[in-house]
Length: 142
Image 1 (cartoon, rainbow, N blue to C red):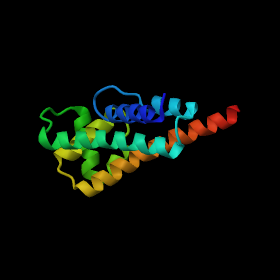
Image 2 (cartoon, rainbow, N blue to C red):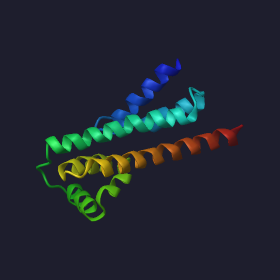
Image 3 (spheres, rainbow, N blue to C red):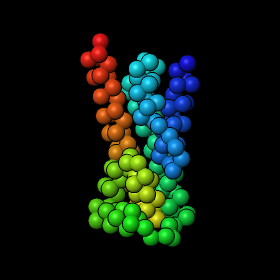
């Protein structure tokens, strides 16, 4: 598989993983790292950009389509966002809860600058940890 196809696949998987659609960006990242499909920094960057843009899509949706139904998760996520502000988006990488945090950040009309910063930082840290563990595992195995 060419490097361009690998990067496009990673970006697509990362974007979809940040939405309510199914995706497995960590598995794709690990597979590409093991296959040596590109520089580690580039794979982390592409995964982070795809996942961050997917998360920002959820923020935009929250601004356009506010949640009407109150659920237990909605209440907890709203309380976290109101208490800790945009820094809560460091947890935007979490399955399901992260999607809801992004939607609620949009619903609460949080400022774009801090939202983008914390959302991207949280997602980047996750991919850095996954990549570091993978690279360490590869080095240990050899």
